Image 1 (tube, rainbow, N blue to C red):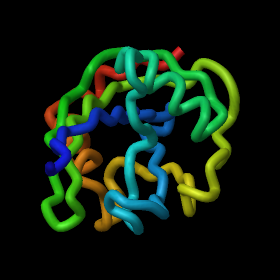
Image 2: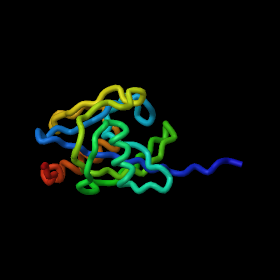
Image 3: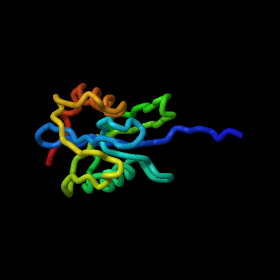
Image 4: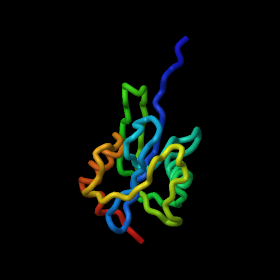
Length: 144
């Protein structure tokens, strides 16, 4: 009998600093290895999406974040990789710590980019989030 294939849930964080730079990570692993992505990860069983993004960012980057709002949800479907994620993306802000690559096995680089100078090789979820930000939301991100 064939195992039923189901979509997974992955979360992403838009983190923009006071210089209007966005934090991206260069992926080493599938899906979309070799592409720049918003930081984030998978939602664990019985975990809320909000708790998942806070946990994933702490594990991946060593920082504590606060969620400002839900920006968008992406249907992250890549037929060629057999990938199907539903990916909520949050606008967040750093409340404690300094950014570090805590998962060098999964991330090649962690880097800040000016919003007007984003690399061409970005993930589907990153592209969707940037489109949403381009509709004006990036100017609504409060900094304390």
